[in-house]
Image (tube, rainbow, N blue to C red; front, side, top):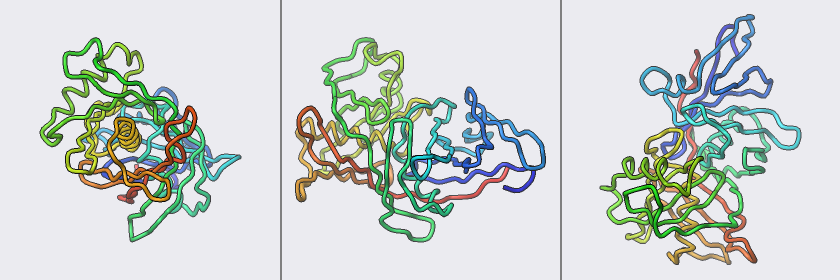
Length: 292
């Protein structure tokens, strides 16, 4: 890092974009959504995560991550939503921070996140883009709701935790759906899902390929893709009987986000587990280096 400056690297995974800082030396501290860094020239740098992620007055991003050192693994991932809230896993962020780690010369893609251990594989590398396969947490519980109290919109669907809390509804004509309006009402209004709220995913399976759009809490808007939401949508599809491709005992769903396609594959669970050895695959693209 140059004296007197703070550097972030911007990456996007299927249009889900992030600011990432290399914090292996611990120079960046976070407290209540504010980042503080002691710069090499002795100056002190302070900026809120919300300001950095603001698309009009900041750099602009759906979230921010710190890549930190780990005694057990190759690195540690710390993730924050664009409003500064943290404590959750982000699937597209996980794939992007693996791509960033590779760009920083890290070769061990085992890492710690808020929901535990993850590992990844880089399947291909073409210029700024890598295809990253990320191992997600196993799924052992899913709850079906016929209706959610506290909301006036249709609210039949599934609740599950894929590293972040998600609610999944199956809908028709997804392109024309009011994702923001109905997603916001379920996120804030559903009594059974409070006080933490949820990300809300709308899934259309009419064309044989799952199409997913997501309202993300912490961003409080629709994002182009949500990795943990895509995983949640696929598990809900499996539980509801939507057919997946099966190769050597592994089930696989191809998922269309707003622009890019991703793949979720897993082994059907045994005993109390629903899905095991669960992986999310998709693009992770370097966009820019930003110096403040």
